[in-house]
Length: 94
Image 1 (cartoon, helix red, strand yellow):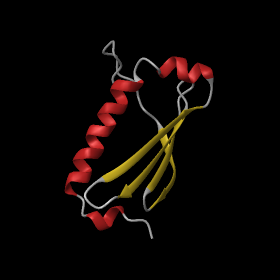
Image 2 (cartoon, rainbow, N blue to C red; image 1 turned 135 degrees about the vertical axis):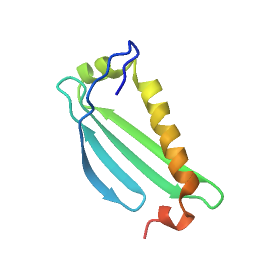
Image 3 (cartoon, rainbow, N blue to C red; image 1 turned 90 degrees about the horizontal axis):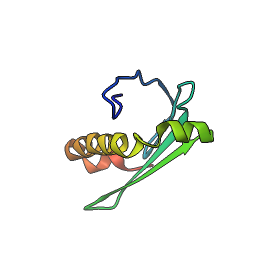
Image 4 (cartoon, rainbow, N blue to C red; image 1 turned 120 degrees about the vertical axis):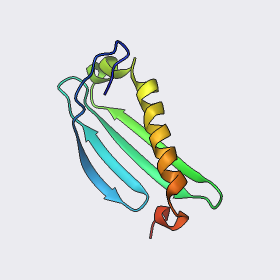
């Protein structure tokens, strides 16, 4: 991960669960610890994405808040590129 000041940090995470239409991961750093849950739903001509980011402590939030908008936008751009090449049936939950 690249911070606003240009410094590079390692980004360590653990996938907590993966199922059709849902991914949850825990990002592990001493101060920057949070959970991201992504829900994906096929709505026909559109895809609905619900992105829930939960900071485990107030210190985690404070340490991340300056970088979150930019980093999340980078993640959304990557997801958009992936969705563009996926078949709609790959997004459907059973």
